[in-house]
Amino acid sequence: MQTDLRERAGEASPTSSSTRAATEPRGARGDALGEHADELIDDLRALRRPRLFVISGPSGVGKDTVIEALRQRYPEAHFAVTATTRPRRPGEIDGLHYYFMDAAAFEQRLEEGEFLESAVVYDYQYGVPRGPIRTALGRGQDVFIKVDVQGAEAIRRLLPRVTSIFLAPESMTALLQRLRSRKSDDPEVLMRRFGTASRELASAPDFDYVIFNESERVETAIERISAIVEAEHVRSRQPEIHI
Image (cartoon, rainbow, N blue to C red; front, side, top):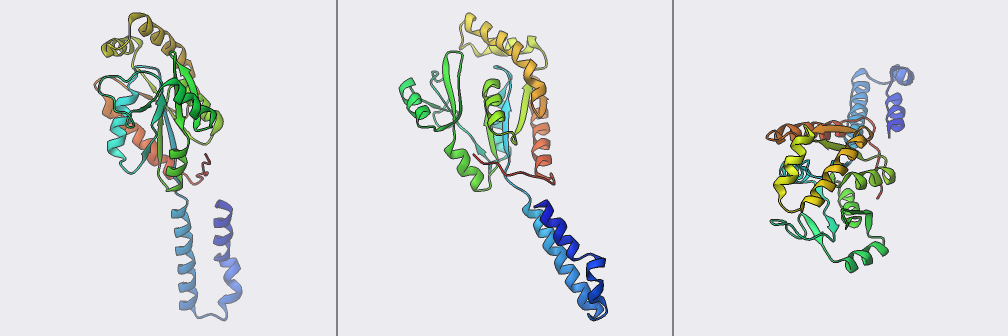
């Protein structure tokens, strides 16, 4: 598209139009150039393509809270729903927060190639369904995917043109407090999550952006992510994403 724009712009350059200058009325030349420039502007507007944003970070960093806030801010976007074999937590809704299913159903979908990526995390299986994402991108919708760090790495390898955002805690003490506040994990699982989080922080530099999600200041993180979304949409080069 960028090459096409340069070629079309060249058609309206002073050099290329000089041979017509002696024969065309000045007003007609101006109208023609104006129409051509309007076409170029329309082409520039058409450069805007749907983007795929991967939101990740260690367990307990607040990914769910951030996604819920982004859902309110971007109601026209598609928010991917992950399938999982883990038990439902209080307040979670099947089909909204996750697709909850047993191991047999998950394995069947895995064998049929329905997942963009899948992984075993804390003894449970997780997978991101491919079909709804492909459909949303085809409709011109932005897509947000919330995944663990392992899943984000798999998606980035498969789709290197996605925009990846790593959510980091303001401190490990704050992260531990968040994990404890869940009261849904036994102490052994909680410490496993905390230990994994320490290692996952080393992956942050591999992401396109790092956002600190501080307790009591979630709105700050949302504003920064929104700025990223807008910046990605005004890039002069916006490659298509094929699922």
